Amino acid sequence: MIELYIILIISAMTAILAVLSSYQLIQHYQLRAYHIGEYYKNIKTSLILRLALESLIIFVLTFSLMSVFDTLGGHFYLLGISSFTVLMIVFSILQFIKKYKTPLKITHRIIRFFIVLIFVNFVFWFGIIYAFYFYIPALSYSIIGLAPIMSYFLCGIAAAIAAPLEAVLRSKYIYLAKKKLASMPDLKIIGITGSFGKTSVKFILQKLLEGRYKVCASPNSFNTPMGLCRSINQHLKPDDQIFIAEMGARKKGDITKLCAIAPPDIAVITAIGEQHLATFKNIETVARAKYEIIQNLKPDGLAAFNHTSPKVLKLFQKTKHNKIIIGAFTQEVVYFAYYSNPQTFNRGSRFSLTIDGKTIDCVTALLGLPNIGNIALAAALAYKLGASLEEIAQKITELKPIPHRLQLIESGGGLTIIDDSFNANLEGAKAALDVLKSFLQKKIVITAGLVDMGKRQKSVNEELGKHIARAADWCIITGPNSLYIYDGLIKENFSIKRIRICDNLDQAVNILNSIPGSKVALFQNDLPDNY
Image 1: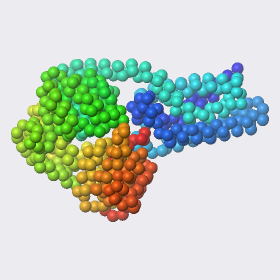
Image 2 (image 1 turned 30 degrees about the vertical axis):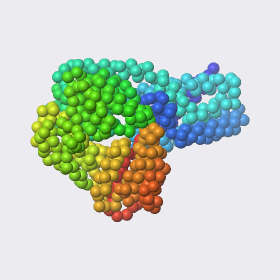
Image 3 (image 1 turned 90 degrees about the vertical axis):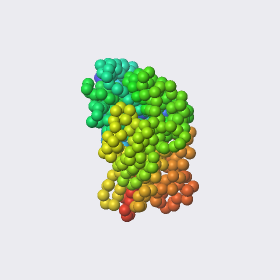
Image 4 (image 1 turned 180 degrees about the horizontal axis):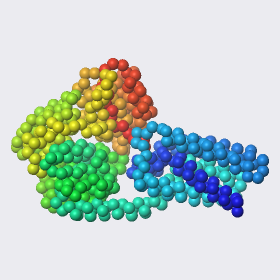
């Protein structure tokens, strides 16, 4: 009987220590939007190798110490488990003190997952220790040394067990969100989707409408079903008149699910481009997925398109709803709104804005040509909602840079930063490089490249390298695309002496600080820890 109690205690201790040492695995699961398939498919090989090495070290040391203490007789062999405890605590602390770009967020869902994971670990290790105790006694307790590598599998099992409960909770949050929207029949819902530009257009439109309407916009980049429900349930107020919902998609049907929660009165497509090709496979699938927002538009709704590519124009042409299209001035397309004479500087932009045949000159602190297009799109929507052209132009002058999207930061000490770290598309990256070229100081690019490009991963990042070579004096590369970007730089005869490849952003910043003189640094697409 005493041996059973010992097994129970050791199983409980192992479960707790295993969960504590699973920080990076749980963080990876969260960064993969709690998708079990994505968790297993996209795990870093380096992380698996590290867990395997930790397991080997702990197992060998625990087995050796237990063998030594076993010669003393009785239960002295259990002292060997002290090595397991100490090493698991050390490895856990090392994970907790490490700096992460996107630390684990302790949400209600993560707390629930922790509880399930502890239970799964306890049951698993109790079964393993109990079985080994009877059939392979020599390994009965030292087998817990394999806890780090087994946590990789047990996290997935715990996620599968927690899935039904999470599905019930999702249904509850969706029900509450729909109920709240149903209680606000006069609320106008604006849904915004696109391969890029969603967040920028959302926040610009919110600013253009403020003062005329009470506006609620989904915060940050909340563009998933649960993010949308959270925006509605926690941020939407009963007296709000307009709700602007950002709608993201990684596969076909995602937009339809979002529209089922918040059916749009106005549906906006900002762009169709090479984004999330790892899941969409090709740009035609991207276009069909984004067009779901138009297919779910209310019968009397308005469809708005930003003419950023021929794909967008084709979607506009096939749309039967009331519709408008916005773009840069051209004789070939009749726009409801367009911008002309764009001028971009290193401190802002100016352009002429024409809406419904009326023109006004505009000045903004926002950088880059894409932001002029975003402003024109938001301005056209604001005009449709009753704002005057003069009112819109005034609001445009008051726009402030959107964090991490071509945001200019004066860091001091002769360093100017262009923070474009939330940009993840080639067209946006090229526009950011055009902004960089407008500066007179030493020009430095810090980039991790572009991800989720599927079969185009190599060619897109090589092309990015070529564009960097034409704009920058130095290039500091991090992340998994380093060699592709390097190849692009070399093909454009960029000086190899001014290329640095490093492991992480901290190293990149140290290299940046070591470059002498007045300089401007463009931070491009700072990838989260799971890449």
